[in-house]
Image 1 (spheres, rainbow, N blue to C red):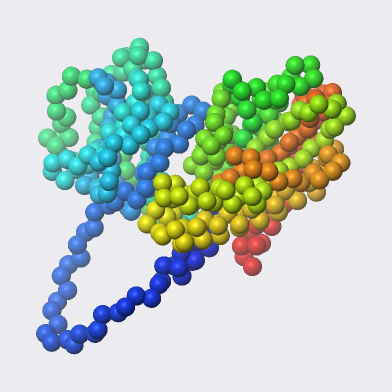
Image 2 (tube, helix red, strand yellow):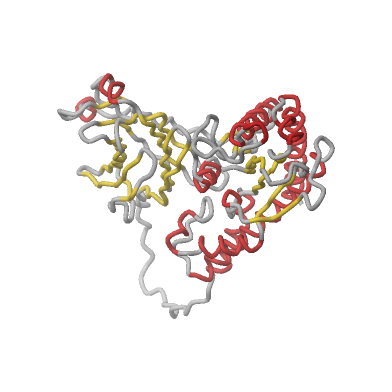
Length: 435
């Protein structure tokens, strides 16, 4: 996604540079005075977003600079509290609706130059992780808080000890917590000392997010012999993840690694939260004919793209329309142009991947005889800043396809073809970025 941010930021600068009337220049009439010492600017929260994952809910704050923090879990009522230094968050004191384990969250200014983020949960919860991501790939520092449900018994068994401070230079008196009646679980994380920049940073491996279609209460297509699409897609996703990670060239994440239900938009949110460089959704369709068989691949259609761009350009969606960019302050024309630019570039990359996939997969498995590359408005393909493709691995209404997809040897062969496709795509992408 850094390629998109560079392109979009460049156009945004051009569009934002609208000529404004200039005030007349004023002559210097006083002697030059020494410049006052620079004022230390307050760290600000630029954006906040919630993401749903199969086993947790993630809250991300994008900041102008890194800050120390302390995290603690409380009961009566159940909540997670993040104590911060004096941080500015315009509009953050408004109670914001949650999702997943998060019921709602709000921001509070506190006496003595401190701030607090209060995350109310819908029941007993635990903090899985809390950490800061340093600035990279065009993104500002990000604070990440992962929260998961727990049982009342497990929550009650947590030691009622105050969370320790995230900074090492706080006096004992300042670090002593006030008396509390509710249990507190110690989960504080310390801000590491700043690391000097490296002369030649090692580039991060591409992130590939694999989405096994359906799951949980949604079995997907039911094929010959009663096989469920959700089981076929999960088995194939695990095999592809195994091969990609085994190559040592990629980071891989699954939108689900067990039989759980995840909404379509949340699958996209998981991938965007992971800063995915490529998103692949795996499916296996079923139709009325047992003779139709073979693999096909879908990318987003132009018509669906237009509808999605129009929706994303709405004011209430702009803050999360493009990863790493908040368009909420832009006017309608600028926001629409920036989103359309990013989306068109993404669609071109998605089509490039699809063509490469058919070339490589066609050597391993049978393709459908007519138009194996198709376009449709699948919800999982609508992210404007992440190349995406949906792979229909075969037809569960075909006894032959069911037999193949149920065999580990065939899934291994299909995985090899996908890995070769992904290798070819990122090799092409690297060359395109250098040219």
